[in-house]
Image (cartoon, rainbow, N blue to C red; front, side, top):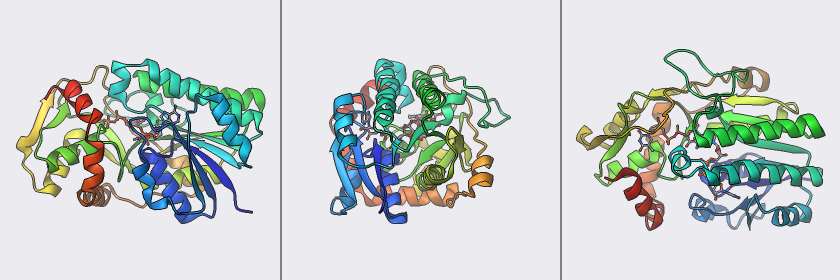
Length: 336
Ligand code: NAD
Ligand code: DAU
């Protein structure tokens, strides 16, 4: 019989792309359990509503009773946890919800998985747990955990709890740590969709500091295939980095977007730097490639072009996510 997975946080950017990827590339069924915070959007999954293998449950990972009800109702093969507060800037202005959701929420989910004897628990983590790099070097799975932002500290705490559940209770857990994702349906508080949408609307493009900070970009579909490779083939207790050798300075990303859209660099506006801004991330994903045979399919150049096309072709989605509370956040954060 085909497996059923509980996907937590499936209405967000990566979770929704993962569910779509999984239904297209496997015969599993999916229950998407999501609290629908400002970042959760059922429009991200509207094309899947009539798929009999897809079900949505509105629920919070911090709510043990609701979790137990959902998990008790059917026979789940595993849980994949994408649910989190994810934006570094928001964690700087309000860290408490990051501890609540990312740490306490993950703990509640682990407890539920343990109580119900769930076969495998995959925690979606981030390369930010390793802290920052200078101009040289790269993060391996053995790099020290040195998180710098409240967001990164909360994700690291969750990773340590997942590790503890493996060692203490013998639970089958695995952790993935991916670099910066880009692609369709990303909430436009993150660099690439923010710059694309502002450029399309001829609004200023706010670059923090001098724009020399480096991020290691991966197309979200490559992240999805990597998560599935880890879910299916990793050994219990393992950690895998995910990355596609896509290092770019922020200014280069912004310039590339303007160039593809045929817009002027005069739209670029240098603004105050992010406090504690990590300088550079670089992920060594060689273990994933050699142990599990995974490889990325998207180059940054082609992936950025197709991503820009998606936002251009989905003006309704863009208008909806940029209305109401988003405008207020934007005004307060950027003061532009
Ligand atoms: P996102 O902010 O787009 O989506 C997060 C989702 O989690 C939303 O649907 C939201 O409603 C849901 N959620 C939040 N709190 C919840 C709660 N208490 N209970 C249930 N659902 C809740 O995030 P994303 O960018 O898609 O990131 C997904 C995961 O991947 C996160 O764990 C993040 O740390 C990790 N990650 C992200 C990136 C990236 O570049 N975006 C890179 C590496 C790892
Ligand atoms: O590395 C993985 C992480 O990538 C994930 O764990 C996080 O959930 C995700 O948000 C992302 O974190 P970053 O802080 O790297 O992403 P963000 O898009 O916020 O910023 C990317 C870079 O762009 C960073 O150096 C800050 C800069 N930036 C960002 C924004 C929003 C700007 O210069 N201007 C901006 O307006």
